[in-house]
Image (cartoon, rainbow, N blue to C red):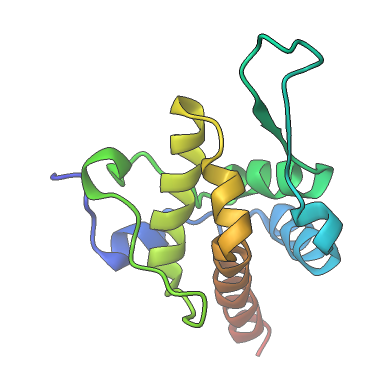
Length: 144
């Protein structure tokens, strides 16, 4: 595999059965405020240290929940394939939301600020929106 799975493979990685995590992700996304989206950069009080982003509790919680629901996947080679095209006026497909989530969260490990940039440009919210919309549609179809 080339590390760029098709949409169906990516969507199949989502953990549909983790309803508590999905519901918590929905709650965190709905409660997200502008203050939560205001990422502060800190040097921990050491003027000689490099600055790093300090994320709100909701951003941290959402990031952890993205792992739990399977939206961060080793199937997608984020280094080779990069971030999907994104315009703030465009809704992401669920597969591109998975690609973008994987890219920004994994990138953060190698260089501070990938999540901060995604929050700043609205990509983080778009990822959450697309994934929650997908989950909500799946949940409704099972309830019908």
